[in-house]
Length: 195
Image 1 (cartoon, rainbow, N blue to C red):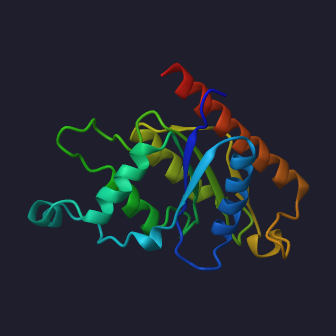
Image 2 (image 1 turned 45 degrees about the vertical axis):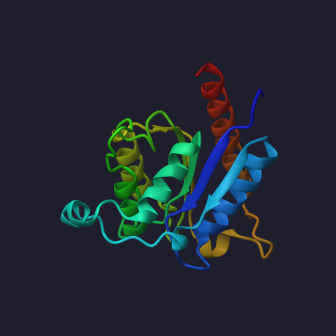
């Protein structure tokens, strides 16, 4: 690998003991073990108002949204752990995507997402592991130019899925996560090399 792919990792939950944060941490460790440089983004550090075009017209894009946009632009790929709220995307994650997608003069449209590989993860207390929410996240990101990779990981019964050390109990889920992360690093490296 000529250069280490830069991956931005984030969870769409602010909850301290979020299962999705736990799952994201495992993905981050794996990506680093495969040679990627991974920066973990905590959305609690970037408080934002609800996306509002009147507010934007009046006050401009909020500083935190511009900081987030720069982080998205400066990375080659995204790793996103997506909690499921009422069978869909969390307001926190959707609001983040909406602000980062706002156009800025002199910048290519959707610069934070266009052509970037994305791997999606989810953990949920339900039987489907957040799959219904992932469908919505996949559609949103695909529509704004991201390359959402087919391999994704959904962890059902998340309250029972983790060991006390944070690792996953289920060997099949561990293997699925390993495969998804390895593919993210491989695809990102290949795209960066061909750019």
